[in-house]
Image 1 (cartoon, helix red, strand yellow):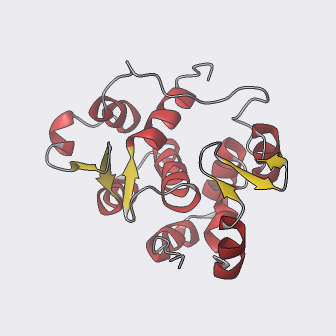
Image 2 (cartoon, rainbow, N blue to C red):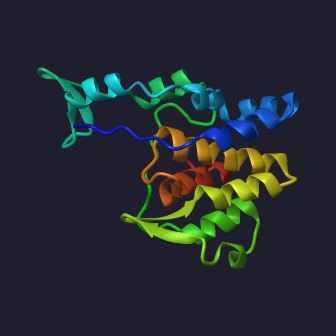
Length: 183
């Protein structure tokens, strides 16, 4: 039996609805149309059907003798994400900076603010959504606010690892994007 669970996105939707039109347009210009993912409903029956064809060894769908997975170009087109360059794939290096350093670089806050808020969930470090929500509500800087919001969409909607938490991988990805690092 497949159990389909997803994060409660009520607070994230409220943040989006609370932004004025100029803030929403600035966000869309930088991150594409990813905010529409907040309104996508989870189709449990579709997921149950698709999991029958999921090949975990190859991380793709296998239909008969055909393996299929969306390409990065298809994701870019689907989500209208101008930040992601075609032909570039994100890979996390083993010797990257720490999760704490990523968070301080992105937010501009000292590491003291994050002390006790970073936990280990599964194999990777993560931070609870409630702490990021606090930052989004406190930040006067719309650029940082938008960046944290985008990280939340990727971490809570597109590829959540642990419900209610943002893991190191998503924060690392966005830290590199903001620094213009060729992924």
